[in-house]
Each structure stands twice: as structure tokens, then as C-alpha cells.
Length: 501
Ligand code: FAD
Image (cartoon, rainbow, N blue to C red; front, side, top):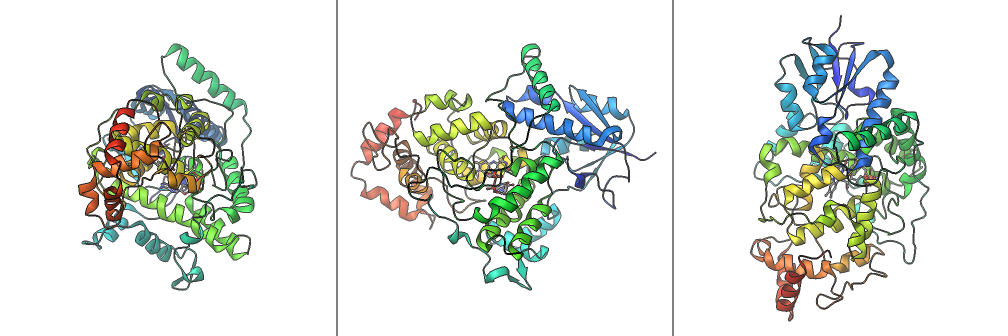
């Protein structure tokens, strides 16, 4: 009989069971383990718990008799129940903790990772070949595109340029409440979802398991069929408009032209290959402009892949980096997703999106949530945990580099060249949040001082020694000298620290 193959809950697509040299046996019996202890350890967003359980159970239903679906307290117990002491294979899990667990179980053979473009050792060779040069996503992205022959014309990038970002940084259209993009794919709940909801209610009632956020109708795909439909709809109806307003935010249109594919990619329901191939095909067939297609491919073959590689490359202690010495505990309004306790319209709107859906797009994560945390000096590790628990697409591998590196600069600049933070002027330019807000983006003192504007100067002042050495931030540090009211800004900002902004 062939060796059984274990699928983690984020290994749900067909590419995790394809046999081959470094894959499971052909037709291997499959094991899926629903471990309740995972939900006991962390207070997850309920919509996320719902999505993950629904996706695992949908996969089990699709695979029928081939899968043994075990509900257990821990993975060890589940594995014992499923296969006893017999051998199993598993593709490299996506977190260090899970890799450590399977590596310590003698019956488990760990196969190479699937669902990414570049093997980790190949990335290591690439990175080490650049000794003395700073690692940059842009260089990695170009190397990957060339290697994979993605959006290329011979040896040159399609259209002659690697990066079309400058066509993609537009502010929202003036006066528009929405972008007017075709609506994204939304799934319809079924019997499996009803059962999941009943189980989660029971866990809360009887097992003392706690969640945060609202578990409204499920918004993200839970099966391969749904994920493929979501990808097809995006490529057909929304990809063409993906690029131009990628960085813009509108209060009444949280999704804009974003793909909403991150949860499907991270559950393994979609293979990144099919996403970039379909996008490239759309461009070659004249159905989407190069700027949008390049922008989308950069997100997946560039950023997503780079983040995955850095998670393993930077090592175990990367998650503990705290270069700016930030130790503020997360406030209750953030922990509880209490959007109503927040006055600043940008933060309150984005927090409500997270509370209600477990998702908001990249710029609100970086420039509203992350930037506020950076300015207030929240503990980066606690913040990583918060993002991980509260987002439907949050997993250890993707949260650690995105929060520690990209958003909090806690690695001192290993991942990005400067801290991502801004005053209210940037938010006012890139969104409609400031209209109707109780604060004014131009004011840094007084009752109507924008928390982002005052917070920005306070952050610059606190870190001026470090930032004055950085060519990308030295001008901003010099700006401090021109602030005649700096003392007042700092005093008022310190007094406000205890309050929700
Ligand atoms: P789109 O804008 O449509 O982008 C297409 C795809 O590109 C996404 O689906 C995603 O798979 C990929 N992508 C783009 N940027 C990144 C990135 N930096 N890291 C990984 N993938 C990327 N993404 C997650 O998938 N999980 C997370 O837990 C996560 N946490 C984040 C935390 C912070 C503080 C920040 C700044 C970013 C985070 N991101 C995370 C990246 C990005 O915000 C989301 O991937 C994106 O908003 C998901 O929405 P979408 O599918 O509509 O993305």
C-alpha cells in the first residue's frame, strides 16, 4: 500500500497532491487534521476561523473516500488516530513551528515546498551571490521574471520596462465615492458553512474558545471551484483596472480593483502560476493593459514570493527584531477591533473593515494601521500576532516579514530602505478619508490636530539620529528644524498617547 500523504489546512489545491519525484505516491491516501488547539492558542478573527475550517471541510468533501479527515485536539493526536505509527509524507509546512513539529516526528518524511516559484536554496544562492549589496525586492523580481520567462520578450521585459509602478500610483478620482469597478466574485454559503458556524458557536459556548470580529456571510472562496471562479472573474472583469488606483483608498469602496485572491493563494487553493499565467494571457490577448498586468504580476511573483523567501532566509530570530526599541502594548480598541472608539476617520473606517471582513487592502494595512502603530511605538511582535489573528490571509510566513520588516522597520532596514509612515497630507491625497473627519490633515497642534501629522513629527523626532544617516529620510529629518512649534507638537502628542486617536 502506498504511503499516506498529510495535507495541512493551507495545502488544499491539486498541486499539493501531484505525484512526482518529490511528491507523494501516486494515489496516496490523504490525511487532513483539524486541530482544535490551534484555535485555543490564539484569539482569531471568527471569519478567518470559519474560512479555514470551511475550506478544509470542502476539500475533504471533494476528495471523498481518498481522505481521512480527523478532528483532534493536537496534530500529534490526529496523526496517531489517522495512521498510527505508519509512514506519511507532507510537503514543507509554511511556518517554522509546523516544520519543527513534523521534522521531530520520525514517521514523517518532509517533501519540498509547493505553491511558490523558487526553491528556498536557490533563493539563498541568489542572495549570497549579492554579498555586499542590499537585498531588494526589485532585483529579485527581475531575476525571477527572467528565470521564469514571465512577461518577457526574449531577454527584455515586455514593453521595454521592468517596472510600471509610476503609471500605477494615482490618487482616487476626484469626487468619486467608488471606483466603479465590476463587483468581485463572492461565494454562496452552503451546508458545510452552516455546520462550521454551529461548531464555532459550540466551541465558544463549551470550550471557552474566544474569537474577535464578525462572522458575517463568508466572503472568500473555500473550495477549488470557488477560487477558480474568483480568479476568472478578476482576470476577465477587474484586472484591466487593477493598476492605476492600486495605492488609493475610498471609504465606501474598500475593495476597489484589488483581486481579493490572497486568502485563496495562502490556503493553497490557487497556485500562483495559474494567477500570473492568466494575467499574462489577458495582456497578450489585448484584454488588459500592460501597466495593470505588470502591477499584478509584480505583487505575486515579486512581493509575495520575496516575502516567502525572506521568512526562511532571515532566520528564526527575525520575528524578535525590534531595532527602534518599541515596547508599547497594543491598546484595547485595537485588540477588540473597536472601530467606534476611534475618532480619526481613516483608522476607524479601516478598523471597521477588518472587524467586519478580516480584510483590507495593502495601503490601509501599511499606511493606516501599520503607520499608526509605528508612530505610537507599539511592540512589533505583538502587532505581528494581531495581524496574524485578525486577517483572513494571515499566516506566520507572510505576516512576519510584512509586519516586522515592511511595516514596522523593526529589522532596521533589512527589508525596506526606509520606514513607511506619513503625515495626514499623504492620506488626504490618496484617499477620501479626511473629508468629514474631526481632525485636519494640515494641523499638528490643537484639538483638530491630525494624529498622523502630529504622530509623524513625533516619530521623526524620536528617531532622528538613525534617520539622519539614511539618504531616503534625511530631508524629512531636516524638516524638523523648520517646525517652530515642535515642542508643543511633542507635548500634545505625548499627552494624547493614552487615548484612542
Ligand atoms: P492584491 O492587491 O490584489 O495583490 C495581488 C496578490 O499579491 C495578493 O493576493 C497577494 O497574494 C500578493 N501580495 C501582494 N503584496 C504582498 C505582500 N507584501 N506579501 C504577500 N503577498 C503579497 N498578504 C497576505 O497574503 N497575508 C498577510 O497576512 C499579509 N499581511 C500584511 C500585513 C501588512 C502590515 C502589510 C503591509 C501587508 C500584508 N500583506 C499580506 C500583503 C497585502 O496587503 C495583501 O496580500 C493584499 O492586501 C491582499 O489583498 P488582495 O488579494 O486583494 O491583493
